[in-house]
Amino acid sequence: MPSRDGHLALVGFLQAQNCTTIPAAWRHPDARLDFMTADYYQHIARTLERGFFDIGFFDDRLAMPDMYGGDHAHTVERGIRCVKLDPTIVLTTMGLATEHIGLGATYSATYHEPFHVARVFATLDHITSGRAAWNVVTSVNDNEARNMGLSEGLAHDDRYDRADEFMEVVHGHWDTWDEDALELDRNSGVFAHGDRVHRLDHQGEHYLSRGPFTVPRTPQGHPVVIQAGQSARGTRFAARWGELVFVSGNDLVRAAETYRRLRAEAETVGRDPDSLRVATLVFPIVGQTRSEAEDRRAAFDALTEDIDELSLLSEGLNFDFSTKNLDDTFSAEELESLSGIQAIRDRVVERTGGEPTVRDFMEVTGRANLSHALVGDPGEIADHFEEWFNTPACDGFVIGSAYQPGALESFVDLVVPELQRRGLVRAHYTGTTLRDHLGLAVPNSGDWRRPA
Ligand SMILES: Cc1cc2nc3c(=O)[nH]c(=O)nc-3n(C[C@H](O)[C@H](O)[C@H](O)COP(=O)(O)O)c2cc1C
Image (cartoon, rainbow, N blue to C red; front, top):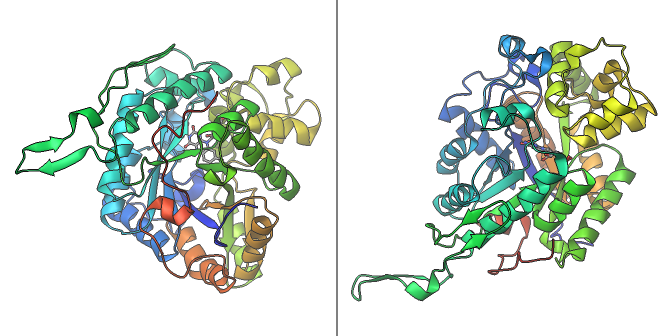
């Protein structure tokens, strides 16, 4: 059993944009539309802190979804995840409005320089007194490539091979200032000890980075690393680098197996499995009663449109779904050639057992229509959390929202008190850093040096 303190981890799944991961979110009558103001995000941060969440984290992509039909007109007209603000700047404003909540953002290891990413998140960790986290992703999508200097994305496993080296450079830079390097002594005139700040001198297959790094060691040793790879290669990467690992899927038996496998893989690369927390994605729709929750769900479903789903599938699978009719099938070769998020493809193939149609993709993945929502009264939602946590199938939950900030507010007002009553959510924060909240130890320099 993991050395969990009895509390499950709560992660707010946030988007620095016009909707949540669900495009219809912005059409909800209770959604706030001032998503380009600091006040909007600061309100969300305070809401999460009021609910004793461990962290709020922003997903990100470096393109708007326009694979469908090769055109962005439908994307902007229907508001399909077309706005994406830089999440680290938004996080900074949230940090200034709160004291405890952890602050995470996604930055791509495929399209940024490791020195830059190391600096952004180390800075955030200082400015927020140890509350920063970086969600490292390997970007899946050709549109991102086209925005970032390439004509198409890298092959799936190559992205991860590159990302391994990226992580070595980032961690290497984070380690180049010894903990006691800073002296700050005006009398002697010594600012920092020259022999306690080191050059990295990294020369690898993909990256050159010399250093020394320009940000001293951070309050958490280094920011918490989040990862969510789900393919076999992605899971290996997550087990090597992830401290907070996100998974998705709503089958308890399978989730328990993924949980066990992630921890076993972490041990294989020489990590203590307790140096990793696993949180699974859910979209709770809660009401005072079950029927109120079901009404809320139905009202939300009425807002969704087929184009939302088709557009997100095209983006996630890196394939233009407009080239097929809804009842056309995918051949084995076409399935093999899908280069996006393989876990999505694999789930559809498994459920349909052969050559799925476009409609099958839409129904099984339900990326835009909340087909994976957890609908119930506070007790029912808490029962689900308790069962998954105790199995154990996860250490906590990534709380997705049908719309913001209302869905998060309902969760905090209705579900969190029930989870607190059961001792599953803290009654107050006992520490100040994100590592404190998650029960993750401060890493020593070089802890990350493990076999690939
Ligand atoms: C909760 C959660 C959040 C994610 N956030 C992002 C994200 O912000 N950007 C992204 O490109 N991928 C995101 N992903 C997808 C994964 O990080 C990963 O890129 C994807 O699963 C493809 O890798 P794979 O082929 O190893 O599965 C997320 C996944 C989960 C479960």
